[in-house]
Image 1 (tube, helix red, strand yellow):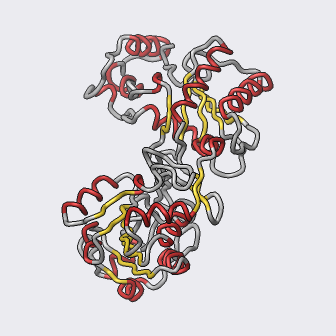
Image 2 (spheres, helix red, strand yellow; image 1 turned 90 degrees about the vertical axis):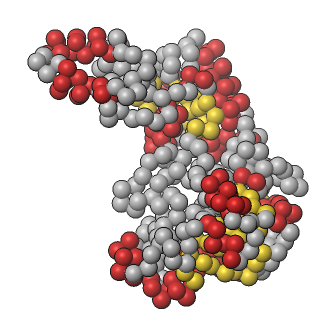
Image 3 (cartoon, one colour; image 1 turned 180 degrees about the vertical axis):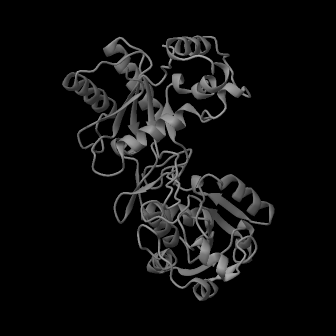
Length: 393
């Protein structure tokens, strides 16, 4: 009777230099023996990006970030546009940026950042009469209108927190609040676009409006600095705070690791095992309104069997419409037959209305992220079984 199963797998504490492929495969095989389950063709073994990067030693220090920022911006004023509000994701990056500049002009979006962390309560914004689509606020304007609002979950006043970080690194800090990226050019022509999923648009708009040196976080630590780690594709995007002086970068070897896990487990089990390295899941907290997706992608590396979109019929549509006159075994048999006969591409077909048109890697990665959690579960490995099964098989 069981269909999709998402199973967290405990692993040893992974350190720099560990053979991540061996650790993952050994952990999965041990769990199979202990919990008495077997892998089948198409089952998926997923690993969180954090332990892949840790095993690879993909770290960088504040000084490494500062050196790269200074080399690329000249060590004077840098405009930092649309960073997310996060102690884990951005505070150490901001330390490095400030250490590599004389002044940082920090432009924050409002009422929230890109992933939903709130600076200002929406009701308070409505009452203020301020128009977030047009109005540019100084810190004084912001405080006069909203006081010192704090983050819903962390209790942090991010305006003060980020100001203190910049000044603590010996740089001058100026904070403005505006939702048009081009506003930063009133303060400096050298701009670091720090948004995640809208970075290319922000960069394009700032350049078109007259920006001179306009980079994104992908351009900082996209190559080693003084022997540091790096990520050629994403730079500082996807990084996490490791210590007060270092960040763990997004893994640079995720595709290789995924393919090697798949190869090793397929050879050991005699089954076709898919594998992926996953980052943040793509889902939204209905209370705090925060999107989880602070990584640039959900699927960091994955085998080719995970490429594509679901192609599914909506069972309740069939039951309520096409087969409304059937019940019991006759209904089940009719639906199974319809599934077997379905088109390879159901796009635009009413029988698929309401199914999820998202990439498989985004769906599976989100499932895995929810399974593994981000705290002390100790399950950085997730085995997903029967994912590609349907009602007909």
